[in-house]
Image (tube, rainbow, N blue to C red; front, side, top):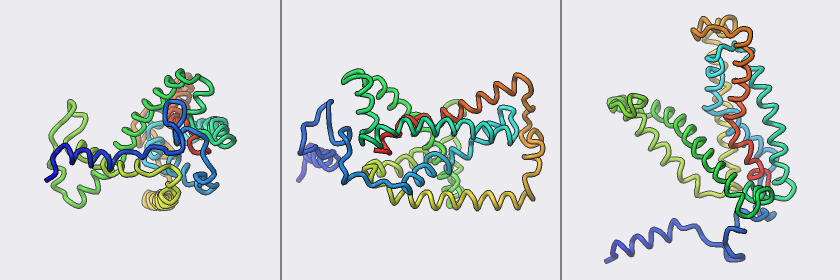
Length: 273
């Protein structure tokens, strides 16, 4: 009969990442930080289209952008201009940030070693890891809210888990949905980034189709843009920003859009490599 110690060792061996056999593994080099070999360069133009459609455009986080900017006092057209300005800037930074990966096939960690040194690179890497925590938590929360709606449609009694948590900022069904959604996402970590071609293709196709279908459906139901375009304050209840307040609201809108994609923006070499 297997002892608990033996079972734990078997479990560790099954989930342990295989060590590289063709090179020493240390802080200087490993399989993921050294230049990517040709056999692992699987991304082409359409893979990048799918990547940006899923991570930068057609996603739940992107849907929250419009309402967030309108809450600052901007109207629809001002919000759209702010988004265009912000993402134009993001595009130039992504091109610059992705150049080392496209030319030398190195990722973000090795690029930082070039600029910060063997040990100094740990500082920008720590910042990058912290940003990934925030980015992952934010998107997991968005996904968990969608999962909550799905579970409620299947089992309406799911909403009975309505005990307040965190001083009323969330409820038990929110926490349960968050944990379940996180568990559903964890298996994706098992796959290397170069194996995400098909998931990106499936996600970009289905999500983009869903976005446009919902846009057409909602526009038809509302019989056009209506008050949202003509006078957004009637819908949002937010007083339109004017004068200096409008200028600062526009600046806040631009920086918010840039900040929302900063994690993805600075890691372009991890994809372009």
